[in-house]
Amino acid sequence: MRVARDLLGCKLVRELPTGERLVGSIVETEAYVGVRDEGCHSFGGRRTPRVEAMYAKAGTAYVYFTYGMHYCFNVVCGEVGEPVAVLIRAVEPIEGLEAMRRNRSVGMKSAKRLLDRDLCSGPAKLCQAFVIGPQLNFHDLLVGNQLWLERGETVPAKHVAKTARIGLGTVGVWKTKPLRFVIRGNPHVSVPVS
Image (cartoon, rainbow, N blue to C red; front, side, top):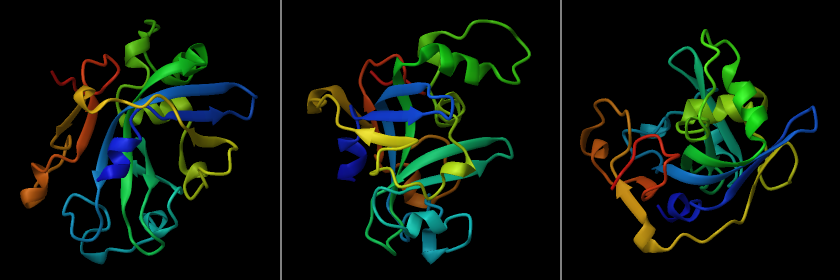
């Protein structure tokens, strides 16, 4: 999916109610290509309140709760009624690192200081660091308030790796399809590739 690849290098920007600004460069994504994709929440035309945001217009945030404890953030990229989205798996923090560190430390038992590379190196870590939760489900990412995307550096093709998506259970042939896009050698990704 082209959008998943093209989002690499774009900036994710979050403005918190406190006025703090958090910015990260997208370094890892996964494509979920709709009703035929067995790994996608909308597989087979599933349309429930949980996945309804996937059916919205391109540029809408789809935020869902998983494993009873974490949120994940997706960018809807299909036409209205076409449930296609890109999971933002990781960003490289650029601005607001101390606020991200504080947000990630909420509820942690250890007072150990998180390394920069560990702040947003996975979808749940990213949502915790950027304070992305159900309040941003259905949010319009194109209007430029609270949470939005900005153009960033173009990532040359030679620096992009395509792999199978992470953490999918039994989803047939979709488990091995190369729908994960990663910037090679970036230390901020969830699972490094060479």
